[in-house]
Length: 305
Image: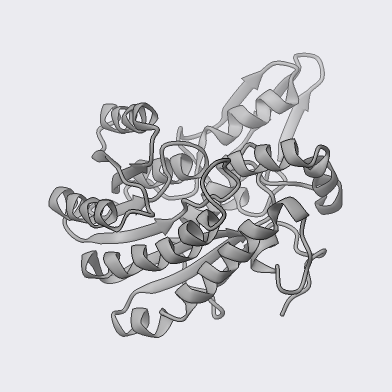
């Protein structure tokens, strides 16, 4: 709950605040006690408070190792940061944003954590194999794999790029990862409502190729659940609505001006990057849902199968 002192324009957030979205009620302050923001900008206060929360308890992942694809920026970067704050050793994967990845690694190391950066294009099976070898060499076998990296709206990548990245490469990624995952490990696949529900709910024309490819990837990965369960590896699909501040949302807005605002009005609220990353982090440690699916945000406009 946020309390506003009208005289001082001071927002005081106490431990256990709900902050208006589902999971922050469960998040914990990184700094114990109360957090005080002084200022009249409510949006700035919200960003300030979000930066002071972590979805995972301190040291709850001590001795564990995690790899998050596409973690040099955005949702992946926040997710890998949450794991590191909870004590996990982490591999920060990037395709071409090496400087950003190294900055994240340095930040984690400065706080006493352990991290490495590794450049790997997920459409290159040789690079993917080398990435997992590097992770095991640095940390031992992995406890958490978050399949976050996706795409398909980039210019000049070829007509089949979305399917190669979002289906074929995801299947290869998981198959390559299997020998490097511990007994009891968790795999999290990140997708969107627009992709997860594409067979029953139309989406924006500009996003259809990506949505179809991501749903194809999800379906192909679900076919591996039996094998994963035999290895005692949990699998969870985390599906979210449009996430404000992501590259995909930016590209959609350019292609279809007003798309984000329209969806925000329809949903009532859109999660931001840090909020959605918190849900992914929780999906990596909380019990696997019965249907292996964690829906984040409003789904009232989407028709289930």
